[in-house]
Length: 406
Image (cartoon, rainbow, N blue to C red; front, side):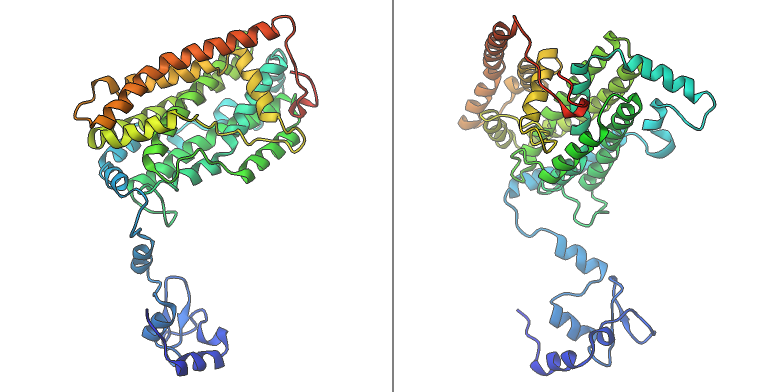
């Protein structure tokens, strides 16, 4: 530890702070990257560093932000080795930004164009044919997408994959920002579509979004990049399925705009799914036992859905009610959950992994048998629910649609 002499501290305390460390007013002051200047007549740069323990030039700041210890050092070593793979995913999976990428406005009424009144009227006419229960699932999906800030925060907790300065040029930091920029379009597009449709209480929905972001999101990744990428591999596929099925329902009820929008978003989720699953494939090549240990442990619990903390401030059971509607409509069901596990087991070719330890083989066997077990449980649960509700479908009131039942 560095100690500063008492006389120096006394000297500084006797000089007005604004004079000792003020924005540069002359060339004789030592300017730092934080736009703070040290007057050498009062404190030399070396003495300033001794007092603060660090200088603030860019190189020193980067060094201080480098992690010197990790909870998962082996996992960090593996993901850092994936840099070239991540660069390839950025080039092949992420779209170009700006004019080369699709934007929400491409799918909405343009009020700067002549004839927008007729276009808006036609859009609302088609949207009016969509039942309230389908509308509820679409709103729930939109709220989930709008909580994007919590998902980028999650990515930055994965050790070895963070963006410590906000503009770091590492492969993982660039992936995180690029992925976020693409995902940001989804909530924007759905939000504007619902607003233009005129059937929703947008303020209630906005309150729900704010509550969800405020509540945060913890899927149990525990800062572990292995857990993080297993989770994102699962969740991106689940989101793709949900958006795709909602779009099909929109088409069934005559809303081609809704179908087109949901299909576009589902396409993005499908590309992102491929990238995250490719990351896990590469991890398996380098550390199969470590990845299987994490995957098995996660499957012994349950994959947390990203919007489970949603509330509108009035209905404490909002997420459960929304989920029940989605399950009843077949938008996202327990069978889908089982099918996703099966897809991941096949995608990562777990049955043919070689060079496993005894513990790794045990986890592999458990995971390969899991989809069949989950399907049986899912079918039993869904059949039970069907018998209970076959006489009367239970409905709930939703503030999102002005208290109407769905």
